[in-house]
Image (cartoon, rainbow, N blue to C red; front, side, top):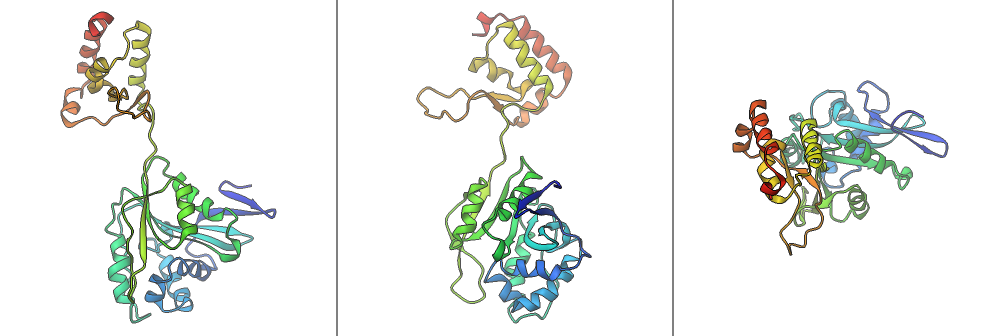
Length: 292
């Protein structure tokens, strides 16, 4: 079974990038149309019109619906799911079209605003599974595939508050609500309530720095210990921090040694290997008693 494939009814379901010149793009467009009952009817009027316009946009490399932003779930040569995600700077405003009287409004107030998001953070714009293929793990597989390509990055999305099924899916993948419920887009009032969800980056226990790891091992071998004062003084070189908390803080979630971003003054202090060597020689000549 190919990578990124699911088994269901002995027919594999494959998650892959959209190919711009393949047949059936109107089926992908129909899935996208179903993701929001307020946005796409306002932009295109009906699913049939969306099925004509969106494939033209999907054949382009750039833009909100450009093919490099889209991954699809395929079973038996049929599109059964789609996810649209943004992770790089781009214009998301759609070209002018006369698809529906509300198109200009939804283009300005919704589509164009997605391009103003932080390009360093993955944004899940739309996700949909064909109704007759739901509750079979396809949506979860699409989401896991997208997040798996950026395992240590942050991701965020907006979902209708009333869509409890989608919210449960995202929360099971590690997303949490960020802020209160806010008004979403609707051409006709009232606006639907929308929830913003975020997924924080995965935290590593130790910085991926072989030099820091070697120093830590040597400290243990010398029996110098790693009390708060010693680790605090060594932070500029090791780029780590101790998770020891003040007594009574009640925070037991962080244990061991974790990553800590260096402050600006620390960057310049330990920028050269010569500085690090002098710093280490000083600690080698210091006894465990003196360090404590």
